[in-house]
Image 1 (cartoon, one colour):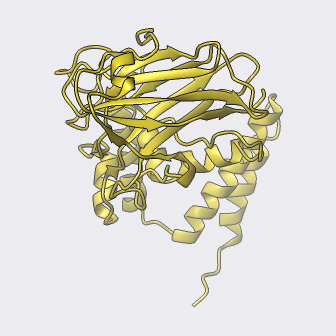
Image 2: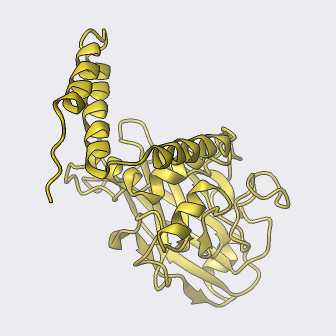
Length: 290
């Protein structure tokens, strides 16, 4: 049976949109009027009870209370788990430039992490030793010297430094720079799969909708260089069991790397001071022109 919405219901939307007509900032006017139209359309479609609407308000209130402004950002987590972050990312990177694909920023970045030399070890907690290296190039293939690679990942317990008080400050985080040939090298540990924080409202939402909270193993990268667009992306472990069901929808096939076993006698071990067997992953980043 089709539900007939009353003229009074439609009039409410029209009144609010009209009230925003004099918004001085033209872009803000577009954003606010569209928000009202779509939010009102959602309410008309699902027809929430008053109890359901107050439950939604409580959910958003609790989400805000879980944000601490630095490490725990429950609203980013909510955006990620609803696929909104990846949709915004896709809209803002439509151009087919040949550059490395982007993915979600995530809620655990901390600025001002240590500056590290080429091949310096950023792992201060145990794990399977790994070397991640390659080149940063422009879309025309020329090397990008002096590019800054800001990197962060979880420890083997699935938590980030800053999130986990048991980890040293700056553990598994660092800022590396490419050399004159565009080369970079990072000593770290092999990333592991981990669940996003599920002790708050987002976790309850995932449970209520029958979803798991797991992310496939990955390294976060933010790559920046003068004259180029800043790149925010991940490198995912090939073969991870959660590649097809990432809770934040961030996986792309082009961003997967293999961690190949290497012996302690490998030339890379000698070059970078690795004193035992390790895993090697290679990946070349391509930056779009600004």
